Amino acid sequence: MASAPDFSQGLKLNQMTGSKAETTENLLKDIGNLRGKVILITGGASGLGKAFCLEAGKHGAKLVIGDLNEEGARSVADQIKKEGGEAVSGRCDVTDFKSQVQLFNLARKTYKHIDVCIPCAGLGEVDQLENELKKGADGEYEEPRMLQLKVNLIGVMYSVQLGLSHLKQNPSKDKAIVLIASIAGYMGLPMGSIYCAAKHGVMGLFKSLPPQAAVENIRVSVIAPFFVDTPILTYATKILLKDLPLAKIEDVVSSLLCTASSPSAAGRSYIIDPSGVYSSPWNATVEETNNVYHAIALRAEAILGVMGTFRSLDRALSPIGGIKAGLVAAIAIPAVMYFR
Image 1 (cartoon, rainbow, N blue to C red):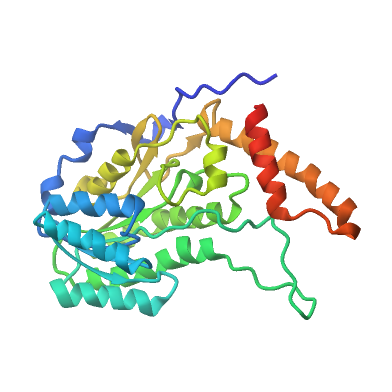
Image 2 (cartoon, helix red, strand yellow):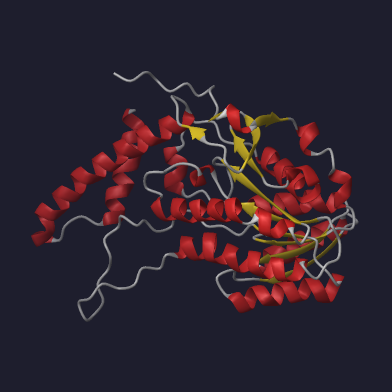
């Protein structure tokens, strides 16, 4: 029988690659560099994006906030201005290239240039690759939405390419692109295939882009948080994470402030774990051990096992209507969490 996961253990990094634990003091050592910097960020109306915007505004950054939630983005900008900072906002659908073009144009029109680009808009696992495809009226399978892939990877690629184009026009030698990955960019996550694929894509971008961007005096960094209690967490995910420690939003914000302000962040990944922040070069590896990550994998496997049983029952009952897929998940997830 496997031993119980030790939740006090955080993530273990390959120490041969220059990985190190970070203190808040060290993360914020160059925070003064933010004053006057123009930061364009998508997904700034809520969660991590909002928390970063409010804190960056306090340190003198000029924020250009884009979000699908236009009213929410405006509210964050208003709050920054009320506290003496500078900010503008606009509606931005990151899956629509022209919508992103408009946000970058807003930044240039308002502040003439851009210093930092942060594609922060994100989406959790709203669809699952494992779900059976729906059939249309013609009896053929319908095209899946793949919304997580469009928001979490294609939208990021749009932001990065626009960011590079605009940052190259800024003669400053202190420019940055900050990518938002996830611990799911380092390892697999059962029941999160599309999300993982997108975040692995972001990590692939991070591992490829820094040398090219450095030629234009643009540093590239990435942050990779563990689960944080923000609106991106679905109800099912919250149940899966029951009684497990989460990463702290203040650690994520400190890491974002670091990557936006510090030249030493160039080419480094900041992994935000329940036990703290670890920075590493692009080639660091993560060891999956008997800790919180292992616990999630065990839970997901158990849930999938229960769901498999219900789906077998569904096939047997299909002549009389079967069982709805949503009902299967609604029963399986709480059942596993109750009995574990």
